Image: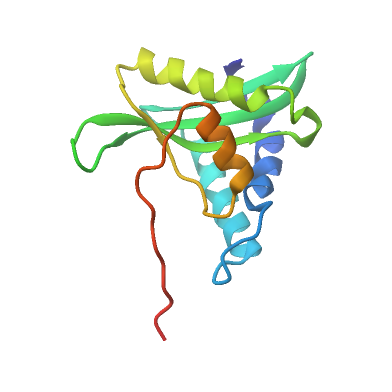
Amino acid sequence: MRDYRTSDRSAILDLSERFTEFELPPWRTKREIDETNREALAAALDAATCGSVVLVAAREGAFAGFIHLQTKTDYFTKENVGYVADIAVHPSHEGMGVAGRLLEAGQVWAKGNGLNTLTLQVFDGNDRAARLYEKAGFMREVVQYTKRVE
């Protein structure tokens, strides 16, 4: 595990399309999600902010994945919490424990920054990611419902 380097930029941005590798809600398009995620991730890489970090996992010297962590304010307690803004593993490194190690690094980062909680969001239907998060000890808390108004 190491900090982000500018030489990681293209590898990280290329992984942004992994965020839509499941059946999307019918009112969302892969294109809109991929474009928005890529833009937000590029902005985060270009302008590191206080309370934010991108960590990179490497296996045998090869880029294996990344985690983008931020500090947010908990709606209910108003306390600062850690937030996993993005996490992705390169397909050639799947099933090798990289995602678990990235999440562990996120917990270490949170604790090192005095944060007692680490949160994240996942689309309903992204069962693979949900299983990973639950295996890592995350629990469901709030479920968002959406309805198109016509």
